[in-house]
Image 1 (cartoon, rainbow, N blue to C red):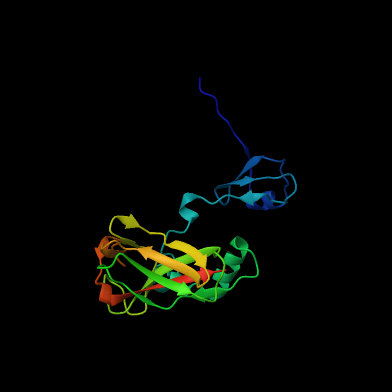
Image 2 (image 1 turned 60 degrees about the horizontal axis):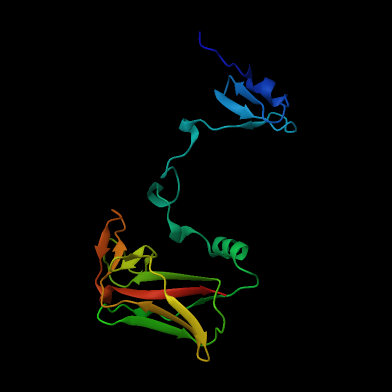
Length: 197
């Protein structure tokens, strides 16, 4: 004969006036969900059912899709502040042309004399390509078989060097709508390095 486990149960009102023991589960018969208790919080903590968890696209920006370009600069500054030592400054490199016919591309930031905490590399669309519009910034890119390639970085008397090895390979991005790897026309894109020091 099988055994049955039955947890404490009650209405939402009964739960709202109940403090369960630490680790205790109870069933809210009105909300049809479990509540987890910590021995201190009146009513405990209601767990979401699968049908209550929002799916991507439920009111998350334009057309119901998450759009990273709508995330405020303050959000990024606060996020970086938690990861990098404060105070920090954000410096953008000059825009660099893409050229698949050279071994590398490099920028030198003469006013930076330390290795940064974070370097974010993006491609900026200059002419519509791979589903992107002019001004779109794309971090999902690669060179040849390398996905999200990292630059070589060093500091000397000239400042911070950021060098991308290209080795005569083709640049590509994840297509904006399909996500499929799509080779790009180098003339349609510029590379920008954002440095957090």
